[in-house]
Image (cartoon, rainbow over all chains, first blue to last red; front, side):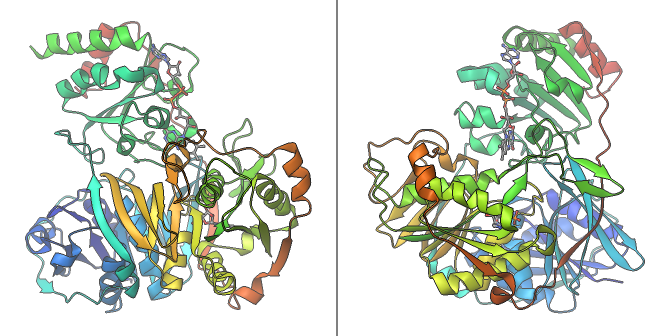
Length: 320
Length: 274
Ligand SMILES: Cc1cc2nc3c(=O)[nH]c(=O)nc-3n(C[C@H](O)[C@H](O)[C@H](O)COP(=O)(O)OP(=O)(O)OC[C@H]3O[C@@H](n4cnc5c(N)ncnc54)[C@H](O)[C@@H]3O)c2cc1C
Ligand SMILES: Nc1ncnc2c1ncn2[C@@H]1O[C@H](COP(=O)(O)O)[C@@H](O)[C@H]1O
């Protein structure tokens, strides 16, 4: 039986919901697990993960962890992992994927990214992960004693609390990598938005190249009405119609909301890789042959510039 | 500035012949080979960082490309030389004898020999989508890393300001060289990469450059060395073992709705998501 260390992702003093999928992963292995909460504000954030049945909630709260510089996070994660953990689990976010291989290299561990499932086969953990932009799933085993994985929020449901409160333990901050002295954090440029995070939204309204400069003008009313997050195809981001952080796909965010609107998106495999786990998919496209219709539960062949405003009106009517 | 660029040849999952799984194994026969797109972007980035933009012939530094693969991958290296790289190295290995950790350890040994100021890698290889070689390499070298770079500005060949594409936006870091940088899609936009030598007014064409016919001929004469994997990494044990593969459950196409009213009705009563 393995001992699992789940590394919580802390952003602005809150635990990201993706962490709960990492806890689900830990539970699926059937092994005991602890959660490491590290970052600035980790002491307060730790309360968010104390009721999930972890053996321990380990806390490292330090001002030097305010910015996501992996050369500062990796040494502490590795140091904690060395205290008897076999599998280190991070979220498959840009933070997790940046830091996890560095931790693996420190531990002499193998690392596998984007885990979509885990099962114990004859005592070894077998990991399921998407390859070729989600065109296939591969099953692999990590051959080293210590293992590091990043886990996909879109593939594993968020864990529900199991009650009680795990005992807390403070862990010391390990010295930063010497390389940290050669990294200067300048800042995070983010589009100010009141909308939910793409990874946490129940509804996502995504737009493609077809929206042109009217991206926000056409999609905002629909997203506002549904309390949805906005998403975009690569083509829409590349053209500057939508900010880069909205990109959904193989190289963008991987999402699985209850309801996903693909509006003016053709449905290239790299885009599908990021959203085909969604519960219900709606596509609006004027080309009846667009590949997006092959994955859509409900397809509407129409000009989006007519259909989306109509949809807004129709929804307003039904909400009234 | 001397830059080492890693370049992987991958089976293209995106052409007419889709990925197939036969008896639990992924079949790459029938798929087209192409350079990993992120590595093409890394090469373009390296070229932009070592020129002034106006005169792409005068290279201000050296760009060395390296691949791990069988003899056939020399085609990929020749193409990179034709696009502007100065020198190529092929580390001889069959694809299934490699994993990210082994590639990273061998690259670290190569870096010790070549002493580049910067290693540019793709953010991920689009076959295995493993997303780790750059980060592993940085740790093995004890160098800073800047992953998922969407923009790079060089400052006097001493440091780089890198705009990293992260979930919450663009995270800017200044890294002091030598460093490892992994590149993301938008690195090849017209203004994404600026060397200290690039005039502020210069705009690149969107995307990667193509080799001119003359350059393709000239590339045949550029140096291409072959290195044995075991000379770089004595321990060739793999840390990841692939057992089997399967196709994802195909999502069955749903229905076409006739109108917006019909759609809203179905979302409410059938899918029950509104
Ligand atoms: C290495 C690599 C990684 C990639 N990663 C990603 C990724 O992460 N995410 C991603 O999305 N893409 C990614 N791509 C790009 C992908 O291959 C496609 O190019 C991209 O998804 C296309 O975006 P699009 O559907 O918006 O544009 P297009 O393919 O141009 O499609 C536009 C669609 O809009 C429809 N349309 C036009 N006008 C109207 C109208 N008035 N009303 C209704 N419909 C209309 C058209 O019929 C068409 O189907 C990647 C590519 C590569 C090579
Ligand atoms: N066999 C290889 N040959 C050359 N470069 C490689 C190889 N495998 C991985 N890389 C480099 O490492 C990057 C990340 O790959 P990966 O971690 O496998 O997704 C790629 O974009 C390449 O630049």
